[in-house]
Image (cartoon, rainbow, N blue to C red; front, side, top):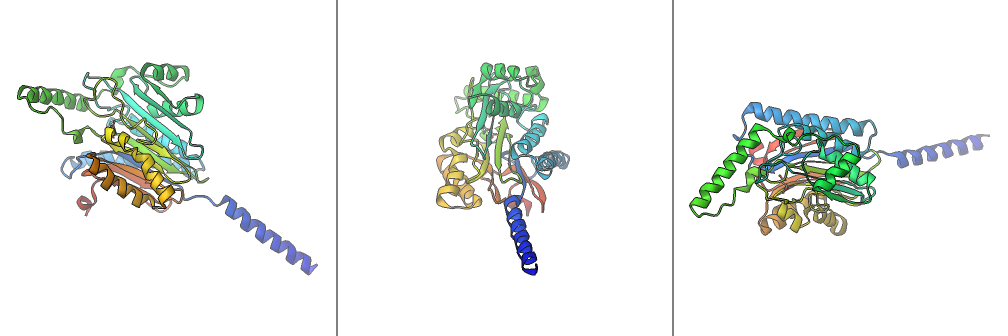
Length: 341
Ligand code: ASP
């Protein structure tokens, strides 16, 4: 009997140890960004800084609440991104920058690290929350990306909320657009290179998350670069450039000068370095953002999250709106490290 009890106890212990292992939950984490650029101290008033930080915290809280209650990484990033799309502070959804023709054209993508399924849309003008459209493309179509009127048609078919294009307009972005047009005309008059300082065109939003089941997801949403030409598509809707997620390596969302992020397949490169070269997410992000990207002439930043909860928020611009939340901490920042000291 004793023996039998001992045997049962052993069985119970092994069984429960096994069960604990099998169901051990991953260190749920969410990391977000709200765009990289010339964000030096003094650029914003303390009240503006407070507003940005409050919105970043709100987005982190929304995403983390999903993870904490056992929700998926995809639901978490969608919740965080919707909040930032709805905020006029960021260059995504309401508050998007203007094209050269004075329109708001939105690019977006999402990727599921568990299945490598992905969805994206480019150049949409009437979808209130483009990240919801990207998710619908991923889940309810056999394709990965829809563009312009086709994307809008699909959104309508899917019952996704649409708005009048003027919904996206904010005075701040309109003023910046008018100033850019004026600067371009002045430059043309003086026969100078009309290229704009690209650093004030940023403000994309993105999120990466790890859920309790160990699944990663990434998403990115943007109005693109101010003064972009007709039909220009940036990196944000390009899987492997603006967004990438694979449970085997990491999840990435990018922000910066899109043309370089496309050429260098920035998001995929970071995950490939993690997967094939055994680098940490921080080492891989450092190599790409501090070497490969500037060597090619580009700038910007990324948020990266690994399946073990390790993360990086790396940029080669003066600042990047960013934040992270896990079981132990929550933090948001705007400026670079040196500025924060
Ligand atoms: N990467 C975006 C684009 O090129 C812009 C940004 O991140 O702010 O469209």
